[in-house]
Length: 302
Ligand code: NCD
Image 1 (tube, rainbow, N blue to C red):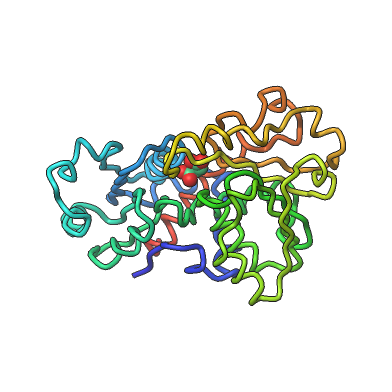
Image 2: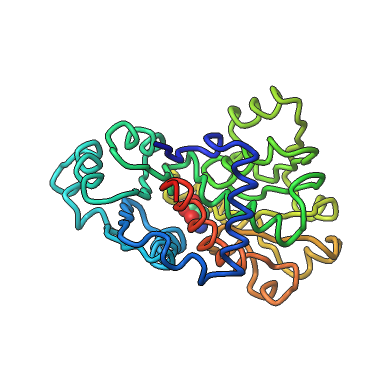
């Protein structure tokens, strides 16, 4: 039985295979509409979500399956003091596959130890978010046309943003991806990610200024400052608006730049950018549905 806890659970061949299936589903939805008939997905969301939970649910419904779950842990027995282990033991008896989001780093791994069905990590604290990465890769492949030989700028909260941890890990298995980490010094990429890159012989640069570096980029991945992971509100308020991408900042950017954001956006991208052809973030969110369909099919071995 396979789980998806971190993106490193998948090989490059498997990721490329998932992207191909997701693209085929995107083009031929009807072909897949009965594939999960009789199967049940449980979505257990101990943290807020719009895209991840709804795209998982929409994915399972689009495959002909059913969905159970909760989107607010205060309505579940967690509020009575039930442990994650017990919740997972019980829910795995009610479902065929579980997608779970939880505020604690490592919680998805703990869930796999108690589940009798595949567990998908839909975000564990500030740690990993592998399904977001799968759809990010699909978007880069579709919009830029390749997953090798390009320069990506990861910008914003690189300390607490789980999406950029998983994305940097995934791109480290492709060829000749050049990383520029753009963040204030308080929100730098964690050492364990930088050490992983160094061990693989991949170089990266760390800078603070977006405008001075935007012309070098083929992909710009903006992120939200993760308010919920800050220990004090003052630090959040000081750092929340350091990067606001607007038309002015895009003046020196490449014509084929691909602008991504996992969403939700707060202030990081001005709405005036939304009608720029380089703004890919809403298409990126849409691709999530097809990528999650491909992933459910793979983990259920259908
Ligand atoms: C991201 C997350 O939950 O980590 N959202 C998402 O899943 N698309 C990014 C964020 O919340 O900032």
